[in-house]
Amino acid sequence: MAHTFCPHCMTETGPEVQICPNCGGDTSVQNVGSQLPVGTVLVSPGGHSYLLGAAKGQGGFGITYISRDMESGRLAAIKEYHPARCQPRRLEDGTLQPQTESAEAYRHGLTSFLREAGMLKAAEDIPSVVDVLDYFEANGTAYMVMEYLQGLTLQRLVESQGTTSFDELMGQMTPFLKDIAAMHSKTELIHRDIAPDNIMLMPDGTFKLMDFGCARAMEDGKSMTVLLKPGFAPLEQYTTHGQGPYTDLYALCATIYYCITGQIPPAAPDRMVALQGKPDPLRPPSELGAEIGQEEEQVLMWGLGLQPGSRPQTVSEFLVRLGLEAPPMHPLPLEPPDPPKPHPIDPEPPRPDPVTYDRKGSQLEAVKTFLQKNKLLVGIAAAVILLLLIFGR
Image 1 (cartoon, rainbow, N blue to C red):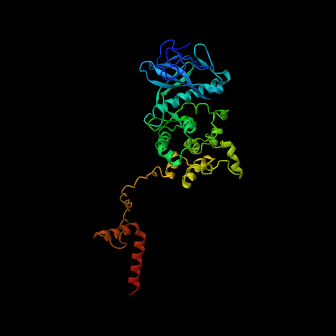
Image 2 (image 1 turned 135 degrees about the vertical axis):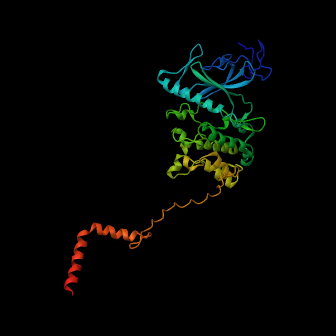
Image 3 (image 1 turned 60 degrees about the vertical axis):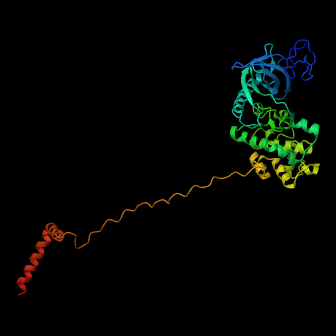
């Protein structure tokens, strides 16, 4: 049955129009499986109503639909939290219900999905990160409303136009990489799913990172390998432990590698033979005919270090080594403070003279005191003197 709008571009077409005059799409297309039907209206707590069109993508973490704000007419991409591992089923009223044994993991992931949406909305001042317009819970799941990007993914670009040189790519990509560094430092978010199909080249020549919202949600160490993109996911994502900005950096370097060689790097587990002293199957881009300088190639291969500790720890560190960002400036020291004053030492108290005193009567007072305390001795001395006087004549 045809709709009164095109599910592909959301243009109003009127009834009984089979082919959209705007995009040429089939207006009778229907979503399939557990996807919400075309024409579903989602209402957020903020009062926004979103008309859903066709599902534009479905992966291990969620389903993305094109939509239109029914009040403003603005297009938006809506990601529905739909973790495949929990095998949720769609009820007739649109509610999403996970399997009983997965209910706890499902709820944990949903909480993480909403938390990450809030952090992304707070990062709306970072130009290269897709804007989050709204997020809310409904139908037993959660939704993230993002700006609708109309451009060409890096994957489509390479497939249609071929590879590019390293210098040309970095000339366009440097502002994007700086924004990813800012995202890491300002929000502490890690995308965890960076790949050529998640980076959009916009009509103005800038890049946008999209498809947030689920990469962290289901990380509990189980069945993660089926959700990762081989060649772009670093080794630590296969264990889900010890991830950081360097995790996204590996994926960024793998994306650069793909854009300049046209080849996806070997999957990280396949490169583990290098830890056993065998040759790393990851070949330098220059061996594949890529246009890249020797120093730049060394830095790129550094970013593709197999172990997290063997690569730059931040995107900024990677850019500094390429000479595309100034090294961090350490603040100049302030004027040195005045040297601390020595702790005052109490002067030694004056010692009295053993014989004389400052005051004139002190000596007499001492003699008087001596005589009073030693009457017996004084008496004996007087008797001795008297005997000497008598017998000495």
